[in-house]
Image 1: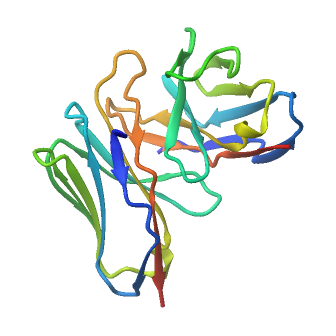
Image 2 (image 1 turned 135 degrees about the vertical axis):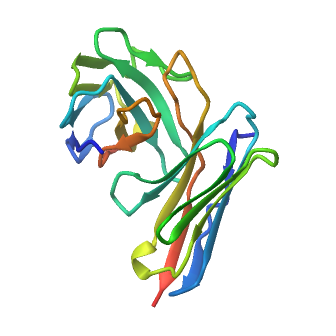
Length: 114
Length: 115
């Protein structure tokens, strides 16, 4: 079992819809959780960063972490065609050997249609 | 956030040759990381490069295949040695954010095709 599971999609929604993206994980030591957005032929761009459980909101984006269920989510409100990209979840536990090595999901491909 | 550049942005190489990828950051950073992103797969950490010490490799990656240099706090190189078609991938460097947090910022990547 991979440590981080993410549905690759693709997920297609109409403009203005609320998008829900999710990841599950198996390693209870993970305590730092991130969402990256990756446009085609570009490097991943950090969107949201959360520590431990709870919610964090930034504009149209909300990140949720439920450590008891080992489940994280990213919600995008009022989705726009410019949100079309691949969304990667990532998480880490403190690792003295390799810093804070990130464990990534495979990414969910999102298409927002006008 | 740091501004990260990589060279080359893409390359097509022959089997058995080697390619060195450069990563330049616009500010001094302690930790730099090298990842591989294969089609349909997760980003996978190859190694962590700290200035002044040997790189730390993840399971499945060895120094002979992926030698890394870290000569100063703004620069690192990753060499993909004796390449085979299985090495065709996107290679990305990242740096850890300052301030004691473990957010990582990524470069644009190097798209490598091995024939």
